Image 1: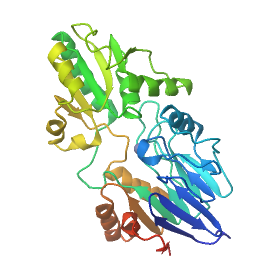
Image 2: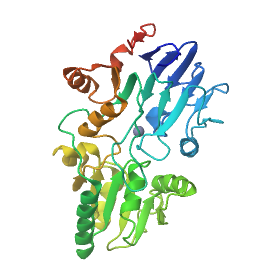
Image 3: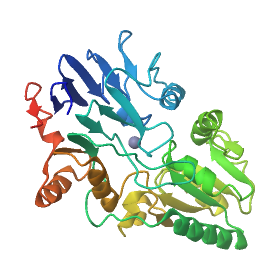
Length: 336
Ligand SMILES: [Zn+2]
């Protein structure tokens, strides 16, 4: 039992937690006047430019990645009174936060180890606030080892046919996994936005092989004819750059996303192939996460939040999507 008061949780452009007289803003979208701000990781939809007086809790990796993306989080702290951070397994530096024994907030989370990334740590708390991007039972992801084997055979076949291949994923997170998994192929190009994020990873001790940086403004005509591999941000096969790479070099386009579980995804992206590699929990891993935290109350955010909360209620949990409270600042949802 904690001697601290019970927390309340609300959502309004981020997630607010009140514990006694202390207020926390978790992943706010704008400058905050809370006692503490928490930035779970350096994806753009979880970051903001803090005001000068904000006390920002974030890992040192998140702080550095944010700066490289133009978000100055200032002098961040990795802990505070009643606060503990845990690896959420999503991308380099991503953290879940535990506030007393009351609230565990996952941010974005992955439930499996991939290359240099671990999986989301769980700790018991009374209230769990969790992401539910893939909160439908259809979303079950294959083991990374199988996916890596399949992609290596695809690259091998393309090289046999003298065709280059472009591996596409979000420039922070997915692109570094692709850079890690498929670095044995030569020549290896990194799109400059990927190279920038790779650099921060290397600074933090992640062993990513150096490659040649590709500047889409200057280098489109300078690539060799014949096979190569490029790691590039996710882009539609119909975008100007990808259309050029296809036309000029016969490049094969491969996209990586959890949404690739659905057969229509590849076509919608204009890609030649797609693979379900994700930095989020699949449905089973979301359930395991709930089991690990063993909460009395679950709030779901992102993606299939209403559906997953519905499934949890059927299992006997008190669960609801937090997004339904976004319109009401004063509607403090008691967790008990
Ligand atoms: Zn994210």
